[in-house]
Image (cartoon, rainbow, N blue to C red):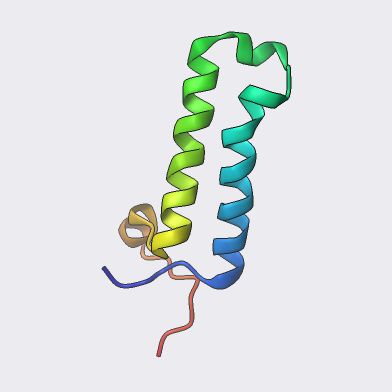
Length: 71
């Protein structure tokens, strides 16, 4: 896998992933009374954290996007 996620993109994904993982458990928002919303938020949060740590996004590859500098 060739890295296709740049530094700013990684930071954004990391922060978004942490927020999405924590939101259902600490926010108290009514939308998270639904199991579906909680599972969706946690699932997307995990994907964001995974793509941030691996520096690779499969969707970026399909769309031909690359936010990191090439060597």
